[in-house]
Image 1 (cartoon, rainbow, N blue to C red):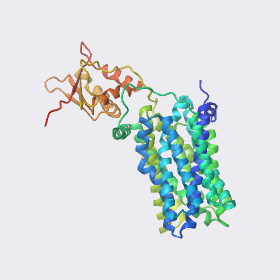
Image 2: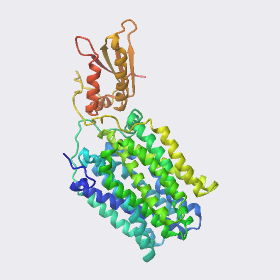
Image 3: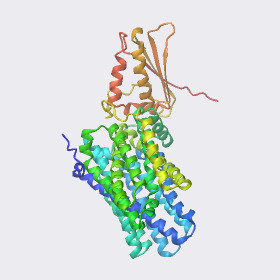
Image 4: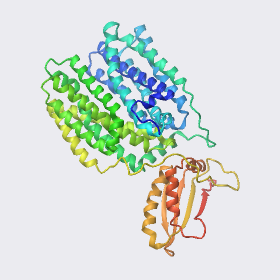
Length: 527
């Protein structure tokens, strides 16, 4: 039995090494954001330009989330991870050179911040995809919780280090330190020796990989539930973080120190909860953790809204951080367990886009509410919204009675062909003929509805089921693949869950022989 304690994944040498690299990378990210925002205030007095620093940092996540996920799935993940890390390091070095030469201006700083954001957007999906490779499946929740600890610890350490360096040496030295740490993290990743997965098929094409990734998520009921729940939660929970500077200023004696303490309280709460999550998960399901965590988050937001001083607000921020990591970890684990390895990076990039999108929308929404009313009204409104949204999203279950086994299997072999077929030839029409007892038609159709979603998740362009009007026991399943190589690729994507569904499907067939399968390739004509 694998050890499932909170720190157990750190006993795996490769995970420990990459986790430390990830922690360092996140510290660098926060250092860069703080230093860039502060540097912009010395380059221009325009509030718009200062605000655009945050936009330049986060916009690449929205623009490049799915493309980066596709690249992480179709390229070697180790090499891709290394490239993304050295991209960030290269940008940091360029910033250093520009600053030391005295050539920095506001517009150039925005361009370089956007370039750094590109590296961050490209790096997150690949790291999310490789974590399940590094630890046993029972340790996955703990590993993801440790990632949450890295993110929250870096949220505290990064700004504190950046502030100390800015105060003592100046903004330029923050970027120098950022560059050194980024290069060190890149060399640490290079020490990872990942076993390459060899496939006889050519790699997926970029745009085709994005289409299949979107289609897989669209046909996954579990991912639908996760995306609804993560969007609803962060649309509400982001209000407390977005309005935290104004909350700090509104407290007696509030200033930069108060803001730092509130931010540290949120991070410390998340770290403490992450350490105790293995015990908590023994008592509550993931759906219960999301439900209770959302209510606790809303309650903590109300306490902060009416806090008369820091002594009341600080414990509430700790509780809010504990609720935040409990919900976020539960949803992240549910997303990871809903995705097979071949599409994991694409699926997690869509998950990240939903998280970032709802956070950005929530910050804009509750900031607007605070501008039209006041901070307290906005926080109360966000808490009420969270409870109402919870009521509407409770029907979306993120954990079933039994988890699907998404490990790959080769139960079904690729077809034998009489002559060579051009891999790009297509589309490919596949038909499967079943003989069904009419009395079992209702149960058969229910299984075939699951089959439709499974075929489309594997990448089929279209799927239909036809019933013979002259013979009520004869059904023909039809599916269309984009090309011959895409048809063969579906055999590599076959999982143990798909094999179990196939057995259920075939159990309805009453013919003397197996269902008749035909494969036809579209005939090209000279125009």
